[in-house]
Image 1 (cartoon, helix red, strand yellow):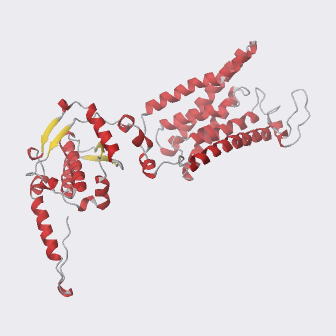
Image 2: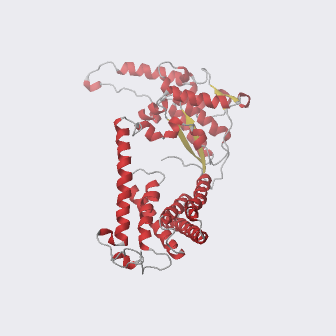
Image 3: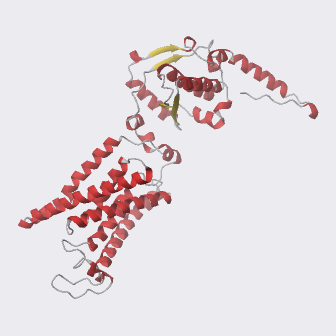
Length: 417
């Protein structure tokens, strides 16, 4: 699951598509250049408007009935479902039929979207339900509804059993195409066969050349995270303004664990967690005791230290345990909940490029310098001062526990926190 882009931009794009549809549907009739063209274009525009509005409102109400929430994304896709559904029959139906086509198109979209989710078919933007399933419904609808005459002539109810040769010849056509619904079904199958065969060949070639699927890591994190600039794409619509930039100076006298050699991954991850703690301590305001506030933070790691730490069990590794204790105490005192998102990186070079990009954009004059020993801590200060002696004691006890004793008196090995 990825954080969505700004919904106002989604709505703006939907209305841009809706406006463009008037050039697509009514505009197609203007090439006839006769007196009837104006009336035809006006009717097509009206049908397009009715179907789009009906589809959007129907999906919006369906989503509210299902989710008990107002789903703006569903409203936008419902509008597109109505537009796609009315495209094929827009020039051969009346306004009442356009309403029915948009309404049924919304049901088709919602049902097909839920079906794909149940089948675990990945379609993040619901392109198949909107353009595929609703497109099929639109083609079939052209065979069910007739311009101003309901279900009683040419494409109407009688067309189920008899498709006239022409408007002047009432003789029934023969074969499966001799009925209106049969002819439309044949058309749908032809389109699926044509598009499916060509796209199938293209996908087969991409698969053979190794270009069809991306690697598993990129698939999990998203293409934006690997090939684009994720802060610009996903930092839109945060709950509040970003906090200030700061640098935290960590001295060996205050935190000797940060200078231990041979354990860089764990140290780097603990320092990143410490920076998060400082941000919460200094810039998260006090919250009303009756309401829980949410603190959202997003960070980029320069290597895979966080992944390594989490995989081994963060709460069992000193000094991360102490930092988590302080962070928990700080959040509890402010009645806050932390949403911390660390983005893993397989490539150090990619992480370096992202870090350098952020530093190039930042005015160093705005940085706030801080020193760890000058800040007020609840539980962290004294414990971190003695972490060096703790490591030495653990090392001594582990060495003594490694001495083999009789089975009845075998000592237990002391594990780190």
